[in-house]
Length: 425
Length: 139
Image (cartoon, rainbow over all chains, first blue to last red; front, side, top):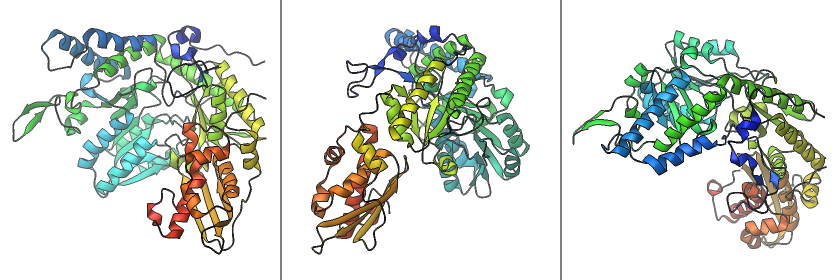
């Protein structure tokens, strides 16, 4: 009998806000939603891919569409004013959540990937050239790696990668070597979605700023799981996605220091982002609207506000403690087996995810068998193909945790892994 | 021991653990390699033809990957013996799932059909119907 750890979060109470966690799976997949053939209780451990959505967040979307759906910033009518006020307040709420100075520094995008592309195209194409380097890490997500790689090809700049050592940590001596006077941008993932490594982003920011380079922090896995303060880490840019922190899909955030965003030209052109237009020329709206062309993500922004309220009610310190407890528990339970290899730092020093392989069973076979147990995990390269090449494996199986997970679900994972072990023995 | 998986019936596991016709071939009439980059499944199919240049005499394969992709290659190597290249060309996804004898979940179809795709592309290149650049599998 395993001992039940006490969770920093009242998981039972939290789970009541997530109806989807009650559903069963395993039957017909043609018709979405629970059907008569769905018999296995869902064990949802794919939170690094996307998190589930609590009632207050869904209700904020319903309230918007039933109560004050309208386009923003252009109508003088009542509904448009309500929507505009709520949409702008969402920017303020995000700014407050990450310690930014105000809405001028908060651009709503589609997702983390678009936030990265915005800076890579709008800033990178204009500023980078031969002789410039962009410094990444070997554990970069494709969102950053592919984007900077392509921008480098277009501009003649080069891309360099900070080594990840055998324990899954960034080699900071190597970072200090790479970041030199040719460096224009240091773009780093804050919490690796594969290794669970927490990068020392404040130290990397110091290295970047000593060379007058900018630092872009990919916060897709960090902002949802721990307190992140842009002033504390001195990030010039920070990006994250709403759907990984209880919000809806279709909204991402780009934080940028105001004076930098002021100096960058728009990425997308169109309505909403202009001040005045003639047949000959146009001028731009103030921040952040000059980066939000067209009808923006109104419902999603309002829902992200609700998601942040929900997380703050729990407290990001406790979210982090809960993540760390589950990560350590999973690490300990899985490392008890000789035939399981876990990638990244030790259990007591990682973000809330564990990527591993079971010897002799391909990650896709393992995930199919886990699925038969109702256990939802991710198998593949997790958009870190070069890192998997470095690890010498084509794919891995990743369990990732959030505020509604409990240690008993990790026990279910371990039992399901054991079933795969027996099947393939 | 739990419920096991519908996808991992004995036949699949048997072909995965004890693959048939796995190995190199000296002087094949054609060989072709393909992969699913996202999962790392790789298959090389080697084919020897009868003197008519049309009937498949013998097939071997080498590769790495998940049980579905490797079992599928093993079963295909048996199934193709005696078929003609045009019969190979006519094989569709349903023929592959029928051969495997299990329901393949949509996300795993790519694994199941890799060996067939590699064999078809290899045959088309052999016939001069397509260039290697036009294949969905890469050499």
